[in-house]
Length: 298
Image (cartoon, rainbow, N blue to C red; front, side, top):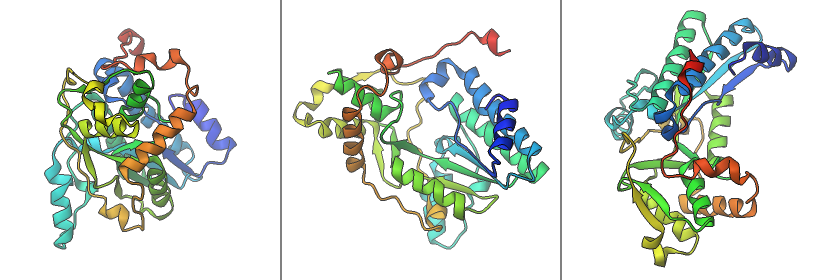
């Protein structure tokens, strides 16, 4: 997405009428050691796509920008439980007007990209929709993410490295449910709106760890498979989002967490050679960091 020439060629060649912008650097741990690359790809990359839209705005009728619930930060009182109570009492809650309070370099880059999209909506009448999703998991996910990483480690008889005490709580949406949500937004979403994509079911990182151990039938030896390691520089305790607006379009999550874990585990067991050993070793360490020569980004 950094190559405007390539993007413009593809838009013209394939007569693209919708841009669904998923492309991003997404791993929070890596953003602590390689934050400039996150700014380059997530902010400048998004800006490049927006400029490409300007070149083809008569052809492209919709721009859907995929963001993250992490742009909200820890302020659950704005976008979580209070939002549910407000909706239930008849008071309208508007994600599009909520405050963005990112707390790590990854989240900050996604918030900056969102602001660029909003600027184009106001300045150039970009027909955009923004989504903010919680954690997605399932088959084919790159092993730098928590769930596939722990599956890979158990497959190698390695302990599961839990940051801190494993207390941060997250919502995990199975990939099939996520795909249906993004499809629903594509065809039924309203331009100018922001849709939270996720599930109300929350689980701590430690509980996720135990669920994966259980899926392997190792729950009686649970303590032997868990290793507590140093926490991140900063680790938000909770991102709870209201999905009421998305559900009003007719979408609802279907796959229960433990069922999704078992489906995911079976896929990785059946596709052990999907990635080469060399390509994933760096992702399986407790604290992955990808440092770069910052002079190359100037």
